[in-house]
Length: 339
Image (tube, rainbow, N blue to C red; front, side, top):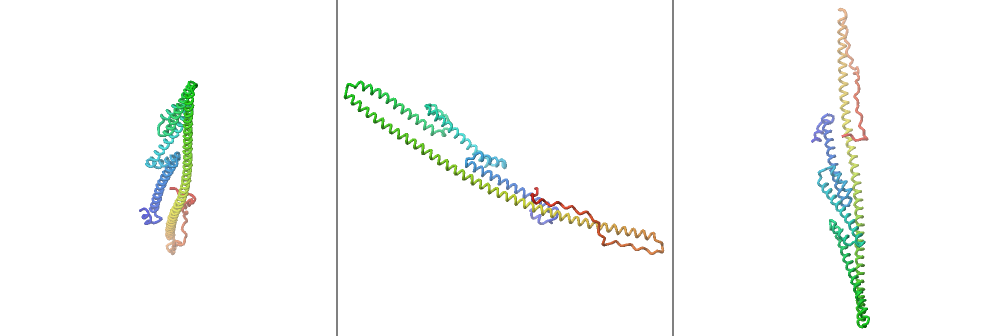
């Protein structure tokens, strides 16, 4: 509506200038709203990317920027809650790692019950469930081995006593020998099985460690790729914003030039009208003065003297010069006009 009204008015009229000012203000307000919406969307997208990449501090900073633009934005509040939850999870995981490390150290120093109790008290329990299960299995294995050793010791004592008692009896001695060989064979078999089980456990731990290392490398590679994509996107947006600012500054300069040209044309027209009015007024005053002077001279002449002719006013006399109107200074073309 303002555009149609401005086109229907004379370019040099004050009302047209007022309508143009309203148009400029409306365009500026719309540009500000669009810039705020663009900045809000950019901040939210950067916050989501940072949260997905695990950069919680960067994501929190972008959420703060979004809330500074729109304090009641629901998406920013949701992302802020997700960041807080991620930080809590990270804190719980770090605390779990420290607790597991301490429990393993206690277990290694033969404080088996204390190490297991430490993990049993930890919350959330799911973060230490696997280490706790491993320590319990190791404790049972240690207890089993100790019982076997104790049983073997007692059996050895019994065997020695039996050998001493059966030293005189060859049959019983031979039977004792065969029993000892059978026992040793069983122990060797059990030892071989224990060795194979230990090798299998170590191989499983090595496999898990290798899988964890590869997963960490893949995560770092993906994070680097996303960071590079975010950097390129930020550069593209910065370039678009710079071009937009240049275009807006050029449009504002052209509008200011047009406004100044209209003001100069109006000032020059007013100056011409003033000079014409002053010239007419001076000519009228001169003609009136000449007529008064001629009338005075006719009164003073003798009765038989011919009357003096009045001198007509000089039509080609130049009008008095008036001071030229001050011209407004041209706008600074290097700076955009103020809003």
